[in-house]
Image 1 (cartoon, rainbow, N blue to C red):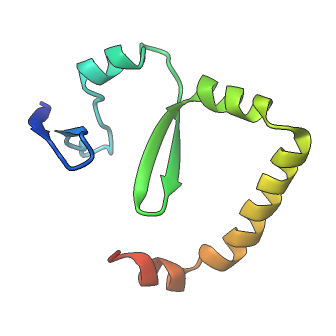
Image 2 (image 1 turned 135 degrees about the vertical axis):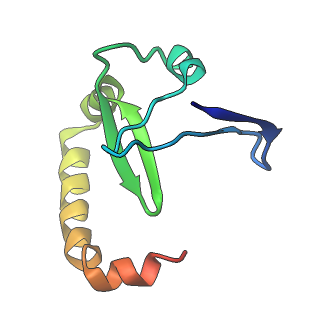
Image 3 (image 1 turned 30 degrees about the vertical axis):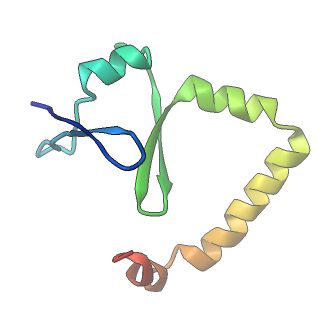
Length: 99
């Protein structure tokens, strides 16, 4: 069951509290599914952004990547690979976990 907060936070967003099942599953609330046209079979991309998890429709990510020039995609990949060596470490995870 989804508990909807009818209060706006400082950014004007309405927040939903959704439980995670014992199998790690979540249910996207119906009003969100309708708003973003998420239906059975819609594929989502899960991104980690610092301490946040972001869901995007796969088709939207594909459109964004297609709109980028080949050079921009190459730079993005290079930056990601370079930063992964520095940031994907247990020490970095420990340093940022409480922020």
